[in-house]
Amino acid sequence: MDRPTRNDVARLARVSTATVSYVLNDGPRPVAEKTRARVQAAIRKLKYQPHAIARSLSKGKTQTVGFLAPSLVAPFQAHLVDAVEQNLARRGYGLILASSHENAAHELQMLNTLASRLIDGLLLVPTSSQNSEKIRELIGRGLPVVFVDRYVPGVPTDVVASDNVEAARHATSYLIRKGCRHLVCISFSDEASSAIDRVKGFKKALSEHGLSAGDHPVLFVRYAAGESVSAELSAHLDRVGVPDGILCTIDAFLIEAVKFLRSRGVEVPGQTLVAGSFFVSPWNEILDPPFPIVSQDYERIAEHAVRFLIERIEAGEAPLAPRRQLIPANYLHEQEKVPSPGLAGRSSRFERR
Image 1 (cartoon, rainbow, N blue to C red):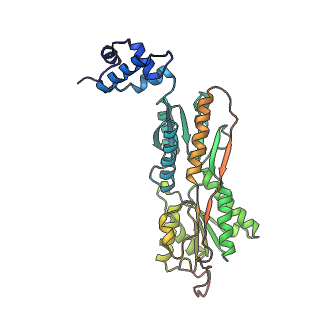
Image 2 (cartoon, rainbow, N blue to C red):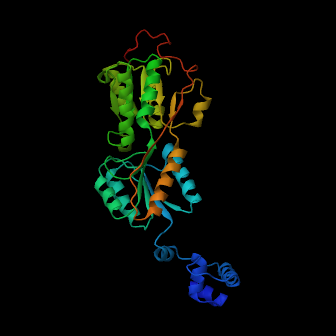
Image 3 (cartoon, one colour):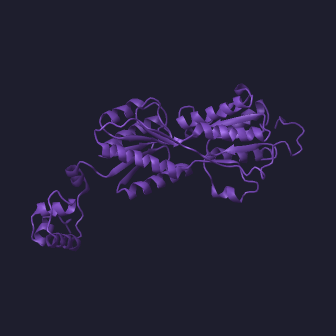
């Protein structure tokens, strides 16, 4: 059976196709209530669905937003996408999703694909600064763009992200206050702004406590390229020994670090206190003791990002100055339940394994 057309609706309702359009688009001309009811009854009877592309071309907008994220399966990103979709739906917008897989070349391809889909705006979690010129080009062509969770320095648009510097500083200070003096930070990237800012926070805390950053290394594990926390930690243990404090910049690293340390006979948290994650797993609530976790407020990030983007879409050609909204993180330390490292009777904090 052929798909019903606007002409079919007009014939059944005994009106012109223009009148059908006025009912579907709620204007621009008024339609008498009896006529409107007749058209709506015909639409229901024929199960007519307006052609989305045709409607968007006539209205100049598609009511659709693109969201390009580094992953659609990582827990934090998945929760963020869900919160974004709910916020957009409340405002009458649909969502087209794409993933860069933490790959700048694929990110460029997806930027081109999304821009060709007649989206009204773009929410972007950039992998790095490599595609800054492309992003500037899209903004210059009139596409509203808002950076979410990460940003590209120097690109003139809105940023909504966690306060990653402060979050990492706070978590590292906690490790130091618990007695850790030989710390390691495991970072997922030296290009993504969120990773760079977490390393800044790690080093800032060291400085505030009178510790030299040179004595507390940052291990870079590019998980998207298949690199392993276990391999990096193993090499570190062989070179230096067992650290008593580890800051993990993503949740997957915390899990892998703990599994690896325990496989090497290191007691966690007895000998090594592992913190960070930047995402809260519900499983942490039933652990005794729980891990000292940093939790990003993805719901507030999504709410602000969607609001900023809709405001840019509705502003049209009216200029809006770039805005920067940093969302404070939450800290789940359970200090009384987390023992300080070194209480497990080790003969040496830097015992090699």
